[in-house]
Image 1 (cartoon, helix red, strand yellow):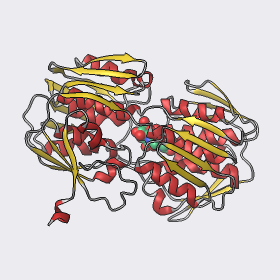
Image 2 (image 1 turned 180 degrees about the vertical axis):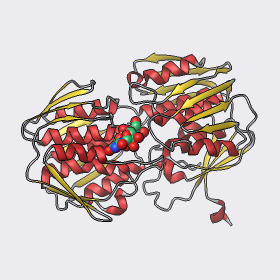
Image 3 (image 1 turned 120 degrees about the vertical axis):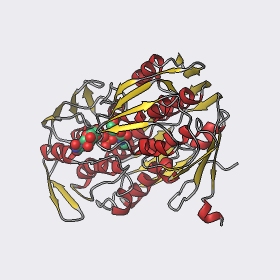
Image 4 (image 1 turned 45 degrees about the horizontal axis):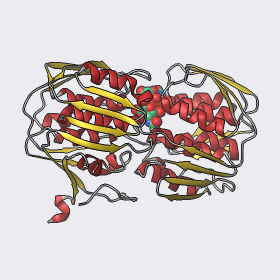
Amino acid sequence: MPTGKKDETMADTRVIEVRETRGLTGEIRIQGSKNAVLPVMAASLLNRGTTVIRNVPRIQDVFCMIRILRALGCGVKFAGDVLVIEADALTSCEIPADEAEKMRSSIMLCAPLLARLGEVVFGRPGGCSIGRRPIDLHLKVLTETGVSVTETESRMFARTCGLRGALMNLPYPSVGATETALMAAAAAEGSTVLTGAAREPEIEVLCHFLEEMGVQIEGVGSNVLSVRSGEFRRDCEFTIPGDRIVAGTYLGAVMAAGGEVFLRDAPENAMKENLRVAGRMGTRTRTFSNGILVKQDGILRLVILETGPYPGFSTDLQSVMLTAALRADGISRIREMVFEERFATAKELQKLGANIIIEGNTVYVEGGQRLSGASVCARDLRGGAALAVAGLIAEGTTLVDGYPCIARGYEDICGDLQSVGAAIRLIANDRQRV
Ligand code: UD1
């Protein structure tokens, strides 16, 4: 049976085929966190020795970051879930435009490259199409640490004669800009105090990694971070925690399709709001030291929900909650407060017959209606995964196009859901089969 594991999906035109499945049972092991590993990979450039990272997910964004690191001159080995990065001899300060276009996280490489080489050439980064994604806050914190930035039509150039510590404030708790600020501060001369920092669990992971490298950080987990650079250790090892968004996606799948599934390695601490909302909707969860047991056997209650920066409800789980709300008793209301255009998935769900009204940044979802399988398209990573989940509750067969988008962040969504009884598989695209 074909699964999603494929290292290079550049020309991957496969489609997910899902048939209605009620009652998922068994266990899914949750992969390492995408949003945690990418900044850790970027920060490993600060280390002139060897960095060993464990529990690394085999996803397309990681492969993309590996290609970028190699283009910059790093030695990179990736075997199983262990990634070894040798960043002793960097040979280029240019982030390849074709790779950066695919992944917004490439912007994270700016601060470490500036620290190591004093300059960086980059384009405006890509990623999912979920609305305007400016980089003004990244540029703000870089400028405040002594970086000058110029821009041509297609490329941006940043230079520094040496990063220096500063007092910085973020007017909005951007995750990426907080990571940029932390990496710049870690390599800067003197101390930095950052107020208004994002508090996402992935920021904590980056702080712990930097501490492992010898950087001193106070306030980890809060929105005020004080950073003092130290002597970077030459070699370090680090383990990536489980992916709270992947765990939340599968929690959403059990909420929608019903059943009882153990999410091994799901990081309960980072999922409190997600679990609270699931509980309010009538889903039972029980936390163990090695994961979370999810049980859904009755009718779901409707949900009134707003996304927000952590510890608020994650915007990345908005579309899977929208899908779960299709099974709820009554009309749910979900408001998107982080990204501007994150309702592309709602429009795809309408193709399955879902009664959804979109008004600005709010959607109203009528639960309990009959859905019928149809052809839909993954417009963004998390929305694509939510469409695969929606296929479980639609009569007949649903085809989800745009698999490469999903493979950016899920190692093997089909294999994972198959292992708990879902009728889901990757098939060749029709256009290829004729
Ligand atoms: C990260 C996550 C992404 C998640 C998001 C919010 C990674 C790889 N991605 O993305 O999965 O959905 O956090 O939890 O970790 N903004 C600006 N100027 C900037 C930067 C951001 O205005 O310079 C705005 C964005 O347009 C958006 C909001 O801030 O409206 C949140 O963005 P941000 O927190 O930066 O998200 P990312 O780091 O891109």
